[in-house]
Length: 231
Image (cartoon, rainbow, N blue to C red):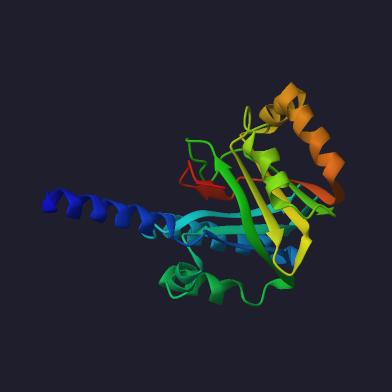
């Protein structure tokens, strides 16, 4: 009897420990690369992504995605197990090589502190070289009830023809939000936008948020492990 009680207590503690795990940490920002250095940046970040995803199991997603109409203007997203592991990543030899290679090639760098609210990736991962298309929505709202906003995304309006959705709130400006939608290619994106669920999703989105800038990005420098969920 005592053994059974100990076993039950152990399982309860184990479950509690999983529930207390830290939220994933997202590093997000916008980088403007000197036009003559775009190829240098692209090669350096691809190498860093390859080694990071191969050697670091606590790196979940990495990408550098240029605007379709301004190929030296990149949005960067990196998702780690937690904030502590992001610091570990920055001590890795491949990251230090990337940093040294790229430290002088930017016209502008803007880090944007965000708090993850909702993440839903498809089971199949996306890899470097895929023809992914990405939409980034910079939004603003007066809605203060995060649960109401979470409910929009938890209904999975978007994922019928998409690969992933990442939703986050700006840490120092909680009325501002970022939504990142990843599609397999342009055809998948167009098909998704014709679906009734997507139309409903967009209708609800427009009723809550004001659009502060929506951009279409090239997603071929983007890799993840697939099936990451957070809500």
